[in-house]
Length: 421
Image (cartoon, rainbow, N blue to C red):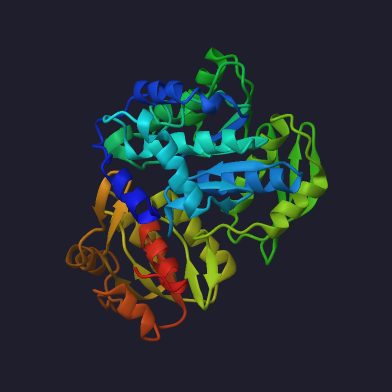
C-alpha cells in the first residue's frame, strides 16, 4: 500500500457517534498480544490543553534522555503526525507497514480511531519506547485509549465540548472524563470549578488514587508575560524558580505546570535541567504559532477561544487582526465570535470540508457563518472567503489570524508547506 491507499483503507472504518465501546478495542488488543500493557504510559485527558500538555510531558521526558512515544489526535496535515517517537512522526512507509501487519486482526466492526490507536500501541511496543504519552480522543470512559494502565492520569480541565457525545452539562462531561482515573494511580488535574473538583475528588477517593490539584497541591507563581514567559513552579516536594516557556499564552503556563507535576508523579528520573530545556525549546504546531506573518491557533470551542483571547491581549495588546475564521456546526459559534471580537478588525469567514474521525466533516456553511458573524459582531467589515488557497495565495491582509477550527489550521499549515489543501 501507499499512504493514500492506507488512508483509503482506514476510511472504510469511519464510525457513527453511537458506536462507542471498549470491548472491541480490548478484543483487538488481545489479538495483538496487548501492546498497550507492554510499555509505561502517561494518559492525558480534558477539554482544552490536553494536546499541549501531552506535548510538554513528552518534551520533558525526551530532554531527560528517555525514548518517548507520543500519540495525539486529530492530525493537522498528515495522519502520520498522530504517532511520534521523540516528537518525530512515524515514517509513511512504517505507517503503511504497521497497518498491513495488523489488518488480519482488525474486525469489520472496528472504528477508524480504534485502529489507529491500536497501531500506536503496537508501534511503541515494537520500538521499545521507554514510555508513551497517550492523549485521550474524546471524553474518557469509552475512549479507545482508555485501555491503558497508566503511571499517571492527567485531566487538564473540563468545559462544554462534544456535547452530542458526552452530555450537555459540564457535570456529565466531567463524569465521563474522570473515568481515566485508575485504581491507586496518581491523577493530576487543572480543573477549577468547585463542583467539578468535587466530582474528581469523589472518583479519586473511590479508586484510592492520589489526587494533585492545581492551586492546592501545586502552584504557579510570579508569572511574567513576555517572550519567553517566565514563572515559578511550586509544589510540596519541588520548587523551580524562573522557568522560561517559549510558547505563547499564559494558559500554556498552566499546561506546563500540569506536565511538570505529571512527570514528577511518574517517578521517572528527571532533572530540573531537563525541565528547563524542554520548556525553553517547546514548540507545538497550530498553538499560537507565529509563522510568515500569520498567527495560527486551533481554538475550536469557547474554552480554547477564551485562552486565545487572553493570549492575544497578553502578546499582541496593540494589534487588531484580519481574521480568517471557520468553525464546525456543533460548536457555540456565537460565543466564540464574541470572545474573539475585541481582537478583530475585519472578519474573513470561510468553510471547508475535511476528513474527521467520523468521515467527511464540513465546517459551518459559509453563508450561515457569515450571518452569525454579522449578527454577533455588527459593524465590522466582513469578507467571505470561498476559496482558502486563493485567499492565502493572493497576498492576504496583514496581520492575519487564522483560527476557529483545527481543520482550518491544518489546511493553512498544509498551504504554507506547499501541500495541496
